[in-house]
Length: 265
Image (cartoon, rainbow, N blue to C red; front, side, top):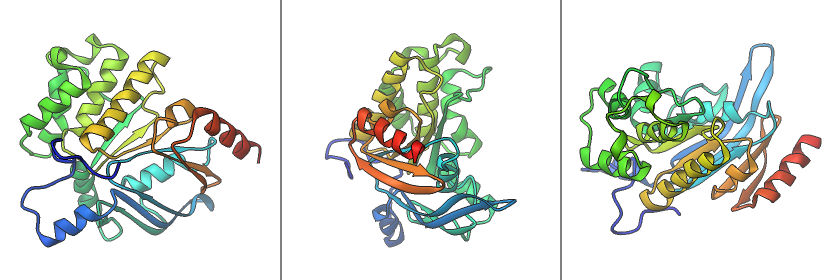
């Protein structure tokens, strides 16, 4: 899963006119955490010496009991929060030396986000919602890429509609297209199927799986649902701020058992 086959569109995050530095960055993992800890006021240790690598073109799910550190892991990996110690990198770019302005720019160009609540702007059309991050960044949309995305998410005939005119599944598809519009290194999903019914949730997971398999996208998804996590290539299980298990291509039953064991233990 760590590459894009010949004949597919260029991988997300790729840039034309690569220098030696950008080629080195392209060879780096999509996400790399090294000995990351996060301690909040009062001594609450949300992450405890976590090391994690997410290779390009893979689908990784993060599971664990409530309070295990899943969301903090995602926030530190995505540059939304700063580790107390250790280092986090996206596409080979170490975020530790960056000020907040530079971190914001990095997130805008290298990271996509998909949330449970969609976060679409009600007054904008689907097309305007999809291209909003690009306009805010002052970037010119790559129309060929956008057309590929819109076809993939199945919204070709919904671009002039507003979010209130779409089903929940269609709104999440629009949110996924928006997350991918800037061709990010990685898309982070925070319970992306949590607000959807079972059938629609499966359709969204099918879409994420397709984006990884056929467009070379990298996806990191936080979820509590073993069936959703089982769609990933690798599942990272957390407890008490640490990675306690890593499973490759597990079944939902295996994950449910692992999660129960972690919760009981």
